[in-house]
Amino acid sequence: MIGSILALMVGGTVPTVTVRIEGDGFFRFAKDNQMFYGRVAQLSATPQGLMAKDGSLLVPRLVAPEGTTKLEVSMDGNITAVLANGSKHLGRFVIAIFETPPKFNHVGNYVTTDSRPTLTSPGEWIAGVIRTNGAANSAPIDTKTTEGSTTTTTPKTAGNNSASEKFVPGTTEIKVNLHSEITSEHILLGDIATIEGDPEVKEKLSVVDFGRAPIYGAKRGLTVLHVRANILAAKIDTRNIKIICPEGATVERKSQKVEPTAISDAVAKAIKVKFGFETQLQEKNRLTTLSVPDGEVTISVSQLNLNNTEISGMVDVLVDGKSAGTVRIGYDLPALSMVKRGDVVRLRLISNFATVEVNAKATTNGYLGQSITVETDNGTTHTGTLIGSGIVEVKL
View (cartoon, helix red, strand yellow):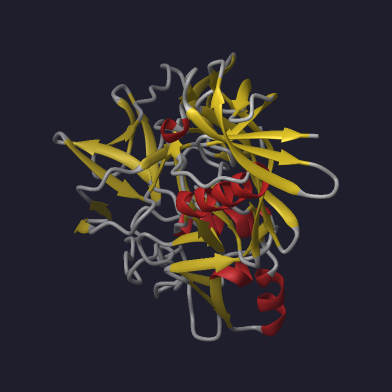
């Protein structure tokens, strides 16, 4: 438990504690079947639960046992009832935070909204911590907002006759881009936002690390809460930092597309080079568009293998000479099915000195890539490999 803060009894025998949130979170209160939100309250221990001055009950409902003499509240939201013969832990505050600025309606010292909050605990993420010093139950909540952000002002505090604005002229302002493309492995705040203000703070903010960039082709969403949480994680005070983040803001790695047709064309060329024939390729497994880094793309085809009416192999996509992805490919070659016994083929005889082609007749059956035997018109027989449509190759 973060350091305990004691609140002495106020108003006779009714234990009372005044609390406020230092952060972006809200307390929740219920009254007349309606939910109210506030950042400061004077809570009294009643048989119905911890109750604010206006009769609304803190949510979730926490009931102090009879005989409670005072209440203890820690910065991380734990509430303890102190009794004459000991103490009892009542529970912990549950804090509401809003990822996008909701439309608030003011009701007395509290606000209502139709928007649904995210629930968390004090001290976690950017919800804030619980304070008791200087809190005042009569302080209203100022819900002025900047479009696309959760900019708010802090409540009035005791001894202060005017609202203390969270953001004042001269503070640092962060404007997150609607869409950002980055080239680095990690997301830095300076790459996704415009930062204006104090040069020293600006320099620190520009290198706030948001973690690894998304994979190529993927996008990562950004909100005010994400930005503020990462700034706090970098141990930078956000009280004088204004954050503006448009709805739907995203960041992605700068990339380019390699279409399936580009891969098929490269495979067809490799087939012609290795086997000496051209053909229409039909994908056995559907290829998808690849997202790769910016740069010069080279497609390298290797391990080509012919098996009956199929061809398989590996495709390496290189960007500026570095591997950006590997794909195993498989194609059907229906136009190059089999040669049957008696079919007329073209016999290609290859020696160290010359290449000769003559007509011949197949004496055995064979599929593309297989060995078959043929007989020439002068009666000589040869065993070679069917390398293309009606082409048998023999290396002498």
